[in-house]
Length: 111
Image (cartoon, rainbow, N blue to C red):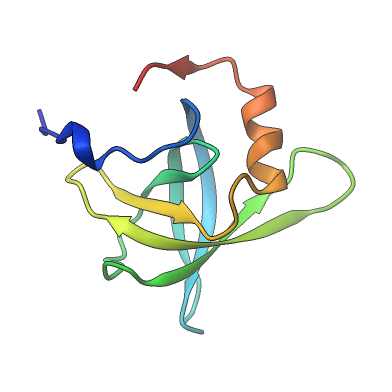
C-alpha cells in the first residue's frame, strides 16, 4: 500500500477508472505507449514503461469516442511519480475528450 498525504491531493472532480491505451509524446521524441488508469477533470494516472521526468511537458493522444474525430491530443505536465504510475495534470482544465470519457464511464470511485 502506498501512503499518499491528504495535502497532496489536488484533483477537481472525482476520479473515474479507465483502461485506455494512449500514445505519449515528450519533447519531440518518438511516441511511447501508455495506458490511462484513472482520469479526472484536472488530470490522470498514466502507466508506461517510459520514465518521464517530473514536471515534463507531454502530449497524450487519446482515441476519441465519437465519430467526429479520430483522436485528440491533450497537453499535460508530469506532476507526481507514485509507485503505481505517473500522475499528470492537464494543461487545460477539463479537456473536451476527457469530459466525453467522464460522461460515458460508470466506474466512479471516491478519492
